[in-house]
Amino acid sequence: MLYPSVQQMTNEKINRYALVIATAKGARVITEKAVREREESEARRDSKDSRPILSPESVNEKAVTLTINKLCDGEFKIVLPGGQKKN
Image 1 (cartoon, rainbow, N blue to C red):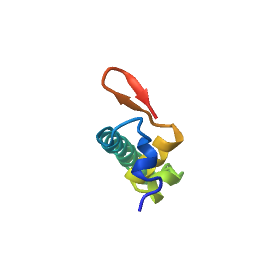
Image 2: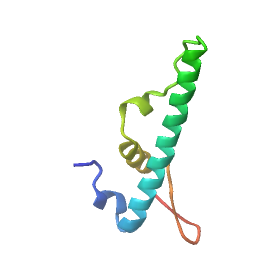
Image 3: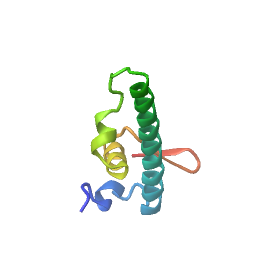
Image 4: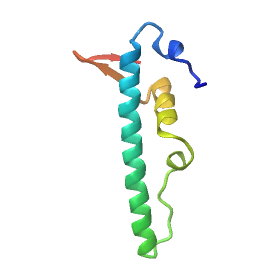
């Protein structure tokens, strides 16, 4: 089970559909960032520069879990049609 629960995240402020869409979009952003970081890291490894570039979060956590945590912490915001922002 995920923490926080869907009921805690929606709190009647947003509907579940908006939460699912926002989570999917956020996970896509995180995944694309991880892919870019991995490619840059491999390019540096090939050029004999041994400094690691991968962030710890992109290595240890799944994208959906990171997105849910970022939504709860307020790092990611849900923007509803019409420009209304919701937490």
